[in-house]
Every structure is written in structure tokens, then in C-alpha cells.
Length: 111
Length: 115
Image (tube, rainbow over the protein chains, first blue to last red):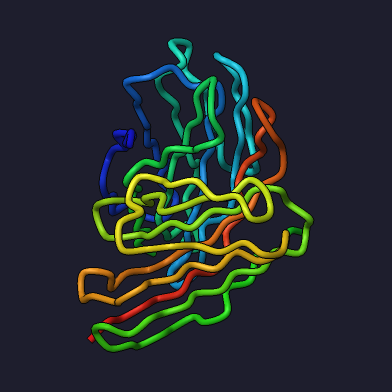
């Protein structure tokens, strides 16, 4: 099955810093999703994107659906300790009901 | 709020045992999914179901089977557990059909260890 390239694999940042991560695919997608997984929990949906070029915010989080439809980006502004976790991207193409997931970005915020 | 409940958070079984992982959702979703999560590999789809008694293989179905006798319940079965099936298992559900599939909602996962 298809796997998305997500980078970086891990990040260690100081509290208050901004964070950027991205996800790329070899195929065109019609939907991009971003999830966060807290330690010991299941992934929770943060943002859903349905249109190329779309920019959507959820509090300090902003995600963009790339113009090429083969990538997506997530930014976190002014990070805080509770931002710690693994962030996953997921994408779905034109056909089928399967979402493909990235390998995750592990974020550590140092107080 | 969507609630996806997995029956066990932690499970320890022995090689060769038949293992059942249960998942229940309370939002009348048509679609249900089983993934396994391993470090560095992300989430890999094992099986999914888009209707009662229907099932489709995902990317890594070998060694697993599933059962969906009722709309709200989706079971993952390890026919004869092996040590390489030690992993975190995540269940998810979603609404929608065709091109209208909605984002998936996940349970908290079952961490399965096979000794």
C-alpha cells in the first residue's frame, strides 16, 4: 500500500518556538487530514482539508492543502508542553475509501 | 462526540493462541477499520469493513481475520498469534460512502504483547 513521506521524523524544540512539518505523496489526493496522538492514546483529528490551496486553522495550528495536491503542511505557533505527541498526516485519493498515513512526526517540547 | 471503544488497553498472550480484539463505535458509522502501529512504520491497514458482514483486506492482512456481525462492532482475530504480531492495534470508524468518506475516528488502542 501507499505510504506518505512525512518529515521531519522527530523534533526537539524549546517552548514558545514555532513548528513546521510536512507530508508528501506520489499520488494526487482529494483529502488531507492531520492527527495528533498523545502518549498511550489513539490519534485525534486536528484538521481536515478538502480543497487544493485550502488553509485551515484550529487554534495555534494551521494546515495547508498543497497546490499540487501531493503535499500538505502543518504549522504550530508558540509551542507549549502539551503539544508533545506524534503528529500524523493522512490522505485519500479520488477512488476508494482508504486513507493512507504518514510515518509520523514525534514532537518534544522542552519547557 | 464519536466514541470508539476498544475492549482492552493492554493484552498479553502466548504464541499459538487465538486472540480476539474487540471494537465498538456508538455513532452508527458504516465504515470500520483495524490498523497496527509500529515505530517508524506509522499506521498500516489490516482490514476494513464498509457494511455488516462485509470485509476488505488492507495492506497487511496475513495472519489476521475480522468479523462484523453487527454494525457497531468490528472484531480483529489473530488465528494463531506469533511474536511478530506484538504491536499497538488501533480501531477506527467513519461515516460516508463512495467519494464522501469522512475522516476516521480512533479508539485508544490495544497494546498487544505475544510471548
